Length: 291
Picture (cartoon, rainbow, N blue to C red):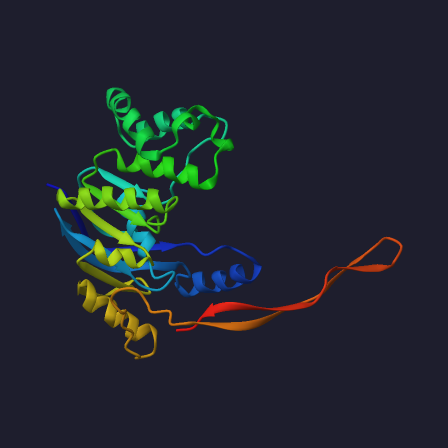
């Protein structure tokens, strides 16, 4: 059985010091006040096997702090956190990779750091390479990889450890379209096997993965419930009370119209002080889809 349990969890960060901050802080110390930034304030929730939950809220609300606490990258200032099961943190993918090591060497080291034994690493290496689609590039130095290739390798390693708890922070757009489809298929397979998912993403694919949502506002849990209801409440609050609804299916684009676009001119100045045009001003009609 896997489980995530938060009880009255508070987490704060010290503000970056500076002269102005220091002057105020000295005064606050004298008054017994704390100028730390409180990212989470007495947050409580619990998740068990098979639950898929989305964390929603504005940037800086505390969502990523929750994930980092579960992953063990942070410790709370107060409160209780209990985690049961192997955690796959799909957070800062590729963190800890070394550019001078090959993809295979980074794979071995990263898998070991995520808790796999030597025999598990040996047994899973071929599957990780196949899933990543890197082929012969796996034995090339990581510094020769594109950013997309690096993310594909990192995702393939993280998802191969057979986790009980999967933490997702804005990584649903890894790689090209074909690899994204494989990633989502793999995630859905884990979900079908009763794994816990806790997700932070602005991708609309998240509503296909999560049934429940937790709305965090300025470090405080504001609402927990069915995904559609919580997201609707959050959207209405964020838009000043306007009810935002997502249309099902593709958005119609209507018919195309010709719109004239004027391209600005530019000139190149030579060392002698003369100028010559490098792009003449022109206008052309192009088809543009109107909703």
